[in-house]
Amino acid sequence: MITRPRRLRANPLIRGMVRETRASADSLIYPVFFEEGSNIKAPIAAMDGQFRYSPDRAKEIADQCLEHGVNKLLLFGIPKEKDEKGSQAYAENGIVQQAVRALKKEYGDQLYVITDVCMCEYTSHGHCGILCGHDVDNDETLQYLSKIAVSHAAAGADMVAPSDMMDGHIAALRGGLDENGFKNTPIMSYAVKYASKFYGPFRDAAGSAPSFGDRKTYQMDPHNLREGMKEAAIDEEEGADILMVKPALSYLDVIRELSYNTNLPIATYSVSGEYAMIKNAGKAGLIDEYGIMCETAASMYRAGADIIMTYYAMEIADAIRKGDIG
Image (tube, rainbow, N blue to C red; front, side, top):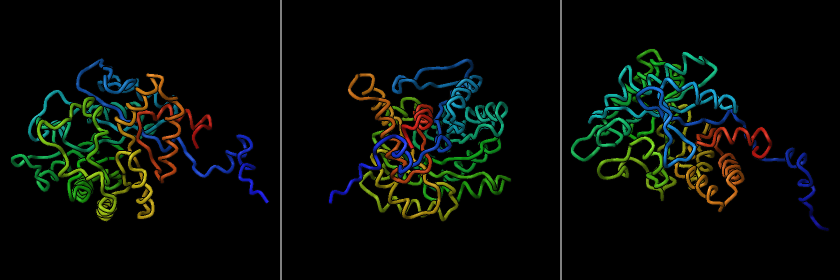
């Protein structure tokens, strides 16, 4: 007797009914870059189709996202002035704080605003913390990260997302938020963040490349999986509400393993290098950009991601609505 799995592939209706991986636009987060100034919509050369906005044009990109059914943004800031202590990261009128206020004033609870908590875009040396010589001082950095998170929450951020990879950072943020009246502000931890070459276009977009050395002493070795589970377990114990794996495509096995080791929601960040590869290969006629976008998004959900941060968020939302994903 022939076994016939093809019976359940006969047409789109039956394929949709038995599909194992389901997706929703509710799970998508669109990253946005904001820079100081006014009337700015500057194209990002390394990321075709992406832009840096000034806060007074925040409505433009937010409206575009909402039209596609994407109602969650992850905000990054590019200040005019940088210093050794990244003081514009926690300034009351810093660039992210300005963007948060503009968005929350316009949309209120219609738009969920998440902020990146790190120092690399704000420090003159480009590292993710306070330096002691040529090393990042982990414990001194924690108090600054807490100040950043509190300033974002005070501006109206719905959630904070620390990407620094300092030991003890979730406990520091949770303590700072709780002590300042923000007990209900969730933390999405970049729990498993690798020292990846896929970040190149982002560093161009945000001007955050380190001026010396690299970030291998605080971001993870790409060879390690068990260490990622340890990092995630520490962040969960310290009070993280969501755990993230970054990047996505080369670390689907890590997403899958984490799904076996936690009951928290799992996010993944499909980073700038992943976006740029697909976008540029599509422009060159080497691949079907739309099809590859759909296939890679499905792979992230299939691996166990509940939430995806991606520069393709709007296009993926459209694809989900059409039934090409999930």
